[in-house]
View: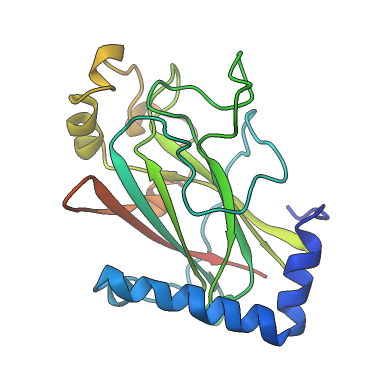
Length: 226
């Protein structure tokens, strides 16, 4: 399941060496989550190994390092807080790289099927001292044959230590899809129960969703083997 990294390898290697500047930046990043209230407390430590799932056909290596991945595209606002912990010890993994990619509200992936403009809904970040990153994105749209999902990879120590997908409660998804711009696409054809990939461990990667003043906050702690 592991592979050598490209340009991000040097950054992760610095983290493994405990370089002072990288560690300081990680602590500052982790401190930024204080404004999310009980998010840290809600993420109970999990030593369960998060199931691996397919990378899928829409992966692009070396996505930009950034928090906001929307590039101005419309959709229900979604703040995504992900945490990487050691599946054996439950210890957080600082200075790892977590990257995500997903469809926009119309079901399109940047870089594919004529969507060559920009790198919307793609990005990566380095985890802070608590193993967390936060992304600002939108609730993913649907495309035929798949339930609503977000792709995720975790890189640590110069290798990919996890490839998986994140999922959403169907009831909340139906509520979101009743609003614009999602509603104009019509009813989706696949939910969690009818998605073959979800049925292979997806329940362990369901995001914990809470409402915010605008949109949703999604959280998940991922147990990996660094």
